[in-house]
Length: 195
Image (cartoon, rainbow, N blue to C red; front, side, top):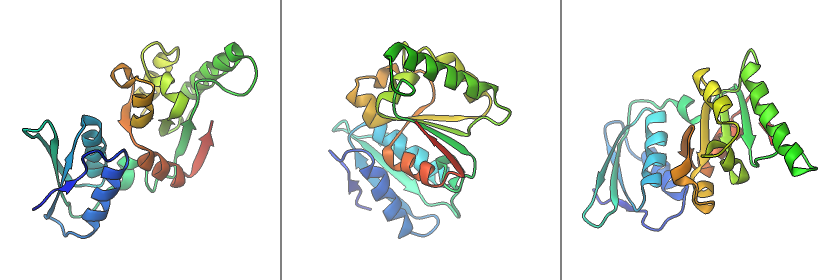
């Protein structure tokens, strides 16, 4: 099988192309992709495992990764957020509301802390753009985010955003995702808070 060449393709194109290819194969058949960075491999792994497929990634001689996804019998959309009727909170900034920056950051800290106290906390917290600063080293809300993870919340941060702000190596809570997965989770949410 000739792998799909995803070298130089920005996130989330490898995930989108893998999903398209998987629609064309039967259970037990495989789709291979050649990617040039570990984040693309991580995003492909989350998508594959979340839909009930098998996943394998191997480094190549040219410092790329050969990803192989073997189609499962039936997908499970739960891990990607698709089909979820639970609360999703999407956070695109490190402050809440307009006004003085110190107050806005205090309000965001209070909001996230309040989420830890709810009887039914959100199932998904999605961080992108400036929200990426909240899940990385130096954030004042890491302890609260860890509490949410302990209560079952799934926390993901946009990989392109982490790369843009040079924060990829500083991620402290949750995992890296892509805008395709963020959009899928948001559009399938039963209830959505978009900050």
